Image 1 (cartoon, rainbow, N blue to C red):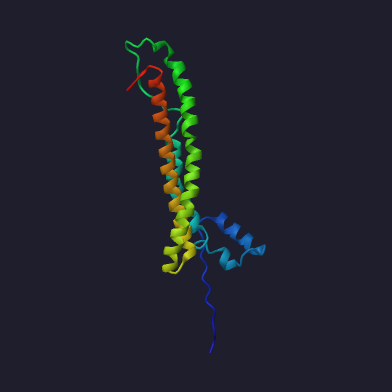
Image 2 (cartoon, rainbow, N blue to C red):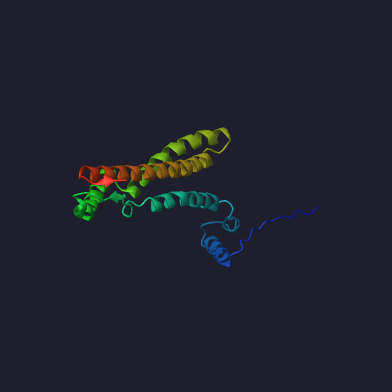
Length: 172
């Protein structure tokens, strides 16, 4: 009776990935079968990078530096000061609301921690606490990061409008 070993090799389409995997295997970092198994390692990287896109889009779209309120200057005795007041109010509103990126980052960290805990609990029920924690951290971090960025932008706009109104401008 002859015993044969069946070896399954998964070869990625990109030759540079194959070369990098074989280099890792030859340097003892991974065995050749682990190095060529691209389905294990990059799943979470792909998931996190795909889910990170909404956070980047939200932070990029919610730029406080470009937003300006519409000011009606008709019949306003302070119309000549509109530009100066807008710049001063922009600076004050930025200080009052915090930066969108900073708030998004803080929200992402908080959401990631809460999501990891919840994901680990759910993952443990289904047999993989580590994957559940990673998925929960990614989803919680992204969701909370987007929410915090949005809230920071709303606070900026409200502070900007209030500042302009308190200086006698008619903000629409």
